[in-house]
Image (cartoon, rainbow, N blue to C red; front, side, top):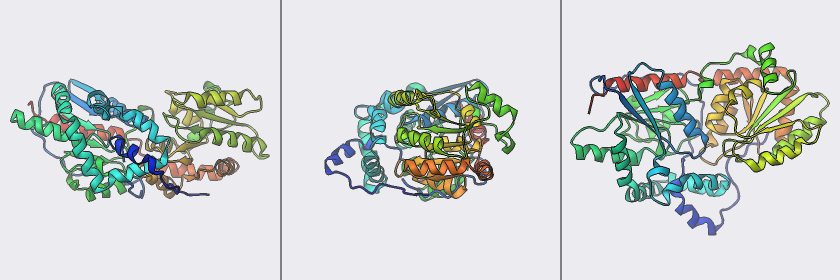
Length: 450
């Protein structure tokens, strides 16, 4: 197994100014991951005021830098809608794309560019995580965008603000505090739900947030280091999509239901299934990995009936390339674009090959899937690699041949697969989303009319 976390090649000087101009784009600091399968922490309730029968307006702040933040926002929206809090209006808002000035309103495009250039990402991540970098970022964004953020939040008039993005703490809180001062009242409760897993940028943590939800012991400790009072911390796990709110069982990995599910997905019921996920934006050297998997598994004598199911996300070029490989009648590859039934593909799979995105890892653990990690974003996702390895339900390599040999070893050893499945299930936190929503509902019920 090869473990390489970080980049060894030097940064070209001509990229330096590009990086400085892109500093607004990141969700970013490396916090070494311990584990995310940790006991739930429930701390004393905070009183936000008197209850109110008025219909409540919840604003969820996010940004489409990757699919994970929107997925988390939608998961919280769905779970909160199930709580008994009376009439409720929930609005998902991308403040940066919809209300910021140029260049900050191009954050999503900046993310897509930097995600494909890991060395630039790494430089930007650690630059903005440094004290000078944080101070510059706060000054620059406040100078450019605070007035527009105030106008947007004033119009939204929230009873509760929930942030699921590292760049929607400092400036929204500053804007809300300024609005409250002008009105002569109190700002609405502000809650942060950290959607990174084993690493987190300091921008996630703000001492003035009324509650901060963290998914792991490591980020609990980091939150305290970055100034969040312990009585404002809650730890349940990562918010995940509704399809992952129920825990899988070890016995679910075999049997008639699983074979029937594979049939509905167009797969051979008794085949071994390797699921390859490139993330919503299709980052990573997925094509090389898939071709090597196909070559290695077809040449193996001890596994004969295999599907390599590839979810390409929004990467149409990758999808087209893999469709050409599928024309070979002996190929094991079945490629798809963006899918909405990822839970079913995970339930049908024997293992998964993926980048170290926190949402995918949390969902894979809930389904009891052994994880072969093939890439990670420097800084932001480095801790996630350690989470998987330390918890014993996966390995990491960037080399297609090593990845293919590792997957073959797993598929050739049913007892090993079963042990890794058990480790994944032990790490899972399927009830996290509902627990977060219950805490948010308690905040809503304690707020007073403004």
